[in-house]
Image (cartoon, rainbow, N blue to C red):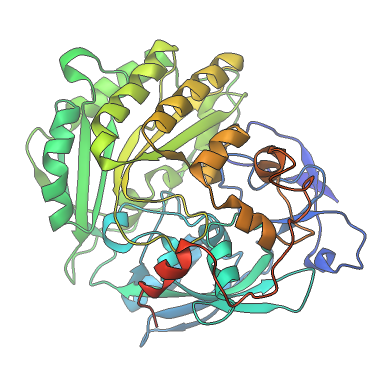
Length: 466
């Protein structure tokens, strides 16, 4: 049955065919399938236009939570917000929480999302204990660091290509309060950020910086740094739920250079010049844009692209400046320009995006060919710095850029379920020369699923989980 399965970038909006989980049966002649969560991916990793999408939200629920161990078991279609609302009254919080709580648990695993504390706790995959994986070519698998280890690693950050995750078990962390004792201050230029971030990260669980991408001259790279730790017991902010929304699609992009220049000046001007501490509610600190329903409509009817890259720490300062200047030179303004540090914990997934260094996120309204040209120029800067692009948020990177970012992609192709594929995978991995992958078919699965034939096998040994 056709229905809307939009991604958050709203770049390719049309009805798509839905399927049920029974479509994984090899006897079912339904073509290819792909699990679909809550549509918070920006690009086409959640789409499968030549096949069908399996909606995971209907009927999803939390099955068990043990306040003694902090272990929760839930269906893949449960949202992170539903998990937080369930566990916060017991004094727990997600170890890693991304910028939106409206992503599903399965999406968080399949995209190995990260938060503001990667320098402390790594990505979401580090908190995953196990999950059940349905495949079309055999019985369901229980995957963990002890069982079916290679499928476990390949599924974390594997964009849903290894099978359909059903029940997932994760570890939560005990907190005195879900709210955040925040330190906020502005910095005059990019040097102001890099001069203080080491000390900030040593003292804080979380840190993130907003950058004024349009500032130039002595103010180039100015922004606002927001760091924090969970508050003490008894410190709570009155609960606040959204409810602003963008009720209709504006006919034009409202986040253009003129409006953003004014917004940036106002936001920067209102930020404290000196370090200021305050108590901030967890929704406001972690998920501020969740308070505005359908905020992606502000980018206009053509949608938006998000460009997120990671690059080594020793090249971070100049790479950030080059990326922002390149966007300005091409006449593009980024509303959400966010800079964070990634720590040195081993990657839990075969294709995990987060790796040691710094990550810069830029959001751009779609202006057609001009935007694609600009994004390709940004890719070249990232490539020259030895960096990588985030595939989970991408809608247009080249196959060559994907291969440069994820040289282990061939092993994921070998482990990909033969009935599962995405538009992203077809556009990147399956578009590479035939001598690297055979016409889009799985490249020949190995039977020894208990072995791991890449560096992530050693990485798994370094992660101490129950």
